[in-house]
Length: 175
Image 1: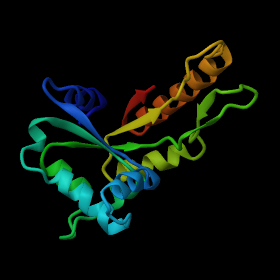
Image 2 (image 1 turned 60 degrees about the vertical axis):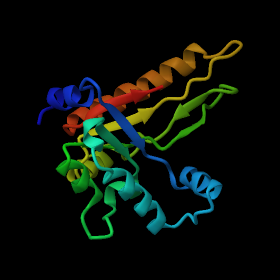
Image 3 (image 1 turned 45 degrees about the vertical axis):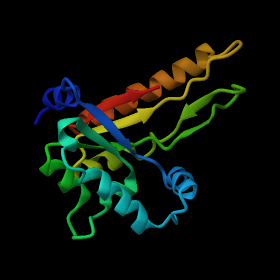
Image 4 (image 1 turned 180 degrees about the vertical axis):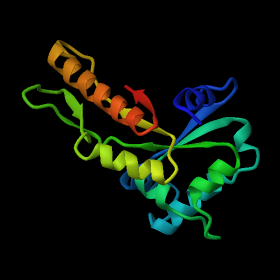
């Protein structure tokens, strides 16, 4: 399946992309709210429950995974990526490493993760990812965003997108 085919499948009418790329700390807050311990087994079971939901493929074109999730196997030993693919759901991967303060730009951020991205993308492709996601956080407020912030984030997004395509992975930009 080529990049154009993957992109078309992701935006199929009546379908959407499920964001299941919560970090370990983000999912901990969700689990804490319902009294579930934040263990790898519980995270796997939660995601397996989502991915095996009957009829999910009717409404979901793709699922954005977290590094831990793309490597996980279901309780029966089936890779979670295979469970998705067997239903016709495209697996994707969050590849940015989060927003950090932008140097010399009070209150503004840059998304990190370009270092080593080419190698990570190759590994994720081998694990079954066909699309990727990168999130740029640009705060809007008094006197921000600055042109500096816009330029450095746009540059990072362009590099991410080019590297993804180089590996045969469709890039998705979130901001």
